[in-house]
Length: 421
Image (cartoon, rainbow, N blue to C red; front, side):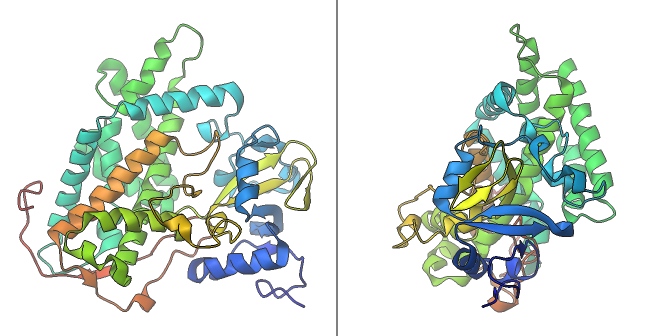
């Protein structure tokens, strides 16, 4: 019998690429689980081997044991086989100084610094910023009767809000939007986007050293005053600000797009299009279970030989976190109850000490929910401008989002920061 995923004999490693990750990931994960179990062998770009953790319980085990399954990429047993131009190097994090690849006590300290800075953000101000920028973006297309929600709205909103709470002036917001989206495109402007983001972060820190404010950058710089040796350098803080902006932008934009797609194509959420706020939260929660923006994450590295899901994992093996697959594990989704009552036991934000910090989750939720609610308030008869079957997804096994979401609506007048609402 051959594997329907690869055409190879059962047990063969599955290439972590191809259109099915965009078109039918749920079916693909079911086939992988059927043919390989809860931990499947996969191949990354260039035939590099890794394990994809598909099982909910197995993923909980991996993310909950940072000693056995470490975030230290230096443990990887494949480094001798990785070329200098390997396309996934930025994701794997070889010798990167950010919090993503810091381990032990230093990671705990950096995570606490980030959580403290984000917790200090006034939630009412955050929502007001999200409403302001949402209204400004909607004003650019509300009189036309048609727009493309992903490019004209979802991919613009999160960065503008994050830039404001980090401490950037609004004049620098559009440049940061361009830089972030250039980096995501991964084309010739990706490097320029990364350089612009880095220089902007260092410039921001220099400004906040001279004139601190009530913003995330200033709160993070306060750690440099610690007298116990736990303070952080500008380099570390700048790296973490870049990670926070990247992690807060694309997944939040996809959360907005995926939730709107669900609400525009599923009759259960039709009431939301006429001002029903409760359904917005339900749709957003369902997306985190069924259509989570972050599908797969690299990764964890085994610190010694071990067993996981009936597989022998060798010391230094790379394990990829199959968040989307684990959310759909039939062992924990036997009756579909995971979607009811606001159940948040999904893996959309990860798990364990390297999960997305809870304050960061709250920031993303406020931006996404406010963005959806303002849009539906302003354009209550919003509808798809193309058949749902024509909507396309980004061809990536890592982040799941729409490439476009064309909509139509009755043209409406512009507003001054939502006064018409």
